[in-house]
Length: 133
Image (cartoon, rainbow, N blue to C red; front, side, top):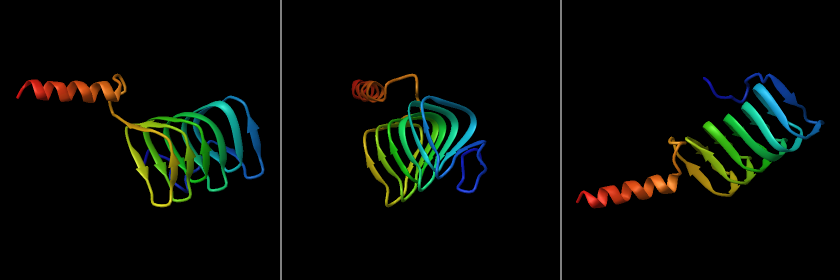
């Protein structure tokens, strides 16, 4: 499959006893089992392991969270929140999977149409359907 699975090999890893601060851009996939703090994390795929602690905004295609994330997620494909995940931040993605046990505080925007604001799109569709009655 094209998304990160629990056992999938990552191109880069921030290990359990590692701390990283700053801006990080990775081509490929990144697994975080340690601590990462920064302004932005730009990566194709990211997996935050059960011991991972991340404080940054994430831009990626696929995001899997099993640990702690403080920051926003902007994913172009999918976000998967596993039972031990704890997230404080907003999520924007076309597909969001939340498993029982997840703690999430933030706004979620689910939309396949990234060119339009979801609120404007829904309002215009509502008005269009009302006008055609």
